[in-house]
Length: 161
Image (tube, rainbow, N blue to C red):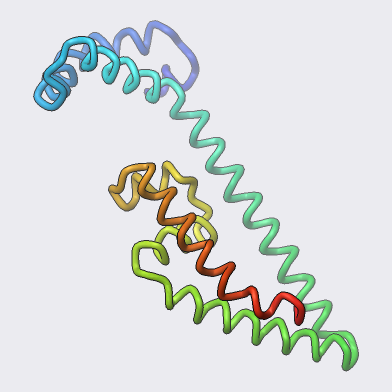
């Protein structure tokens, strides 16, 4: 795997030689169609070859999330140190945060889980699908429905925020 991550093409060929027969047998047990099995096997090895890139993408997402969180915390600290007007705004934001948490808790469990994994854990749709063992389309639907319900819950507050 180290050689694959260093883009040595012979390493991927060696991995294929070692494991393709066993993987193919597993895939055949599910798919039962030669062309489909070939496609699935090829997709698996393509995903292995891009694993390093995906890891880097995930690291960058987490770093971006961390930077955004740090900026938000700095802003909250700065606003908490300013006079009365900002104190009132901080109270409003705190109330809004509580309302949003309550609205998220009111979502159906699977929609709430998708929203929390996407926005609080920074997971992509595919990562949520893998974590919850749900089909990608189902995850997208759950997330969309959850966000629609949150948007609807926040609609009466739009003019106040």
